[in-house]
Image (cartoon, rainbow, N blue to C red; front, side, top):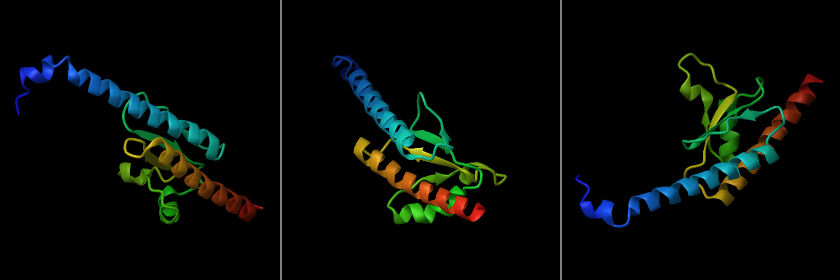
Length: 130
């Protein structure tokens, strides 16, 4: 498809659209990062992306993101376990969270739900470890 001169000449409409999208995704990313800081266990870490649509989270080594996925879905939260991105089975304690589609409020709610699950799993692990 050829882009017409009108597309480029209508006061650079595409630049305005692009700037709006950048602002939208930046706000969603920031909402996710703030929610992670508030709700995730302190021994978790995550990336602070300058582009893209995802935050990579590293959980404590004893947590298995793939094994927790069903419990997360029951709480109406989804993510991609890190093992999906490693051909050798690594990434069991990693997960990829997308911020490109949900609104800021839904991101905050989802992270709060996921954080509650992780806190429950942490308490269970610590009680078993004695």
